[in-house]
Length: 291
Image (tube, rainbow, N blue to C red; front, side, top):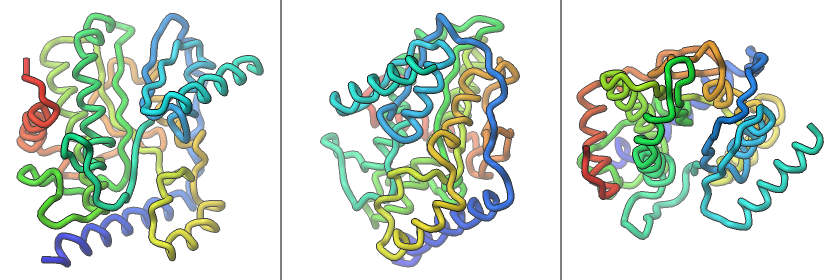
């Protein structure tokens, strides 16, 4: 039981990491093409106060977008806004491998911060997105997943991982949930004929504070490896910026983007029954009624 619930998710996650590093050893980071000016458009960037979220916000500002940073800390938000203003003068939210922890609502921390918060925000904004998008200028939803979703399993009867907690299993579950959510959302948007697209992006392994909760030995090994093989936050952000504004992704939804390329996500992520069940369960967990 312990092996299946704790050790197996850990092994799966680290195997995913090794595969990504092997890929990054032989492939250069995605380079953004020339992107159209986005003046007059609005972007909401979650986790936009640091790391890839901040880099995403900065790049969108340079393209002329009005950027709203969604975060939990006022001071960090003000600091991030100042940094972007400084950049203009010259020219994504997540957590990983935290010990078992619950929010005030009793929700597992990875599930809440990495997935349910984005699920709730997107659905609260959905009517506005539907009225904002139009043919030739779709509104876009971009969800930041990761390769760890390939190791993920969704336990609908125990999404909060209370039976036998594994931080590795909880993290990979939250990233798989984002992909499942993205595909289900796109299916509903397409069926309704709305000019809104939803895509999931994978930034690769990026040198951010996400890795601060690795084991001590892994932390020691990570530092020299990161200098050679990890992407920078700006490189990691490039895929989300591309998904948000690139002309060749206009009206393209329901795809998983890795290093700027449409890529097959995990087999489990295409399970339509699981997508539907998770969608319904998520509405219950965030305390909303489906419309």
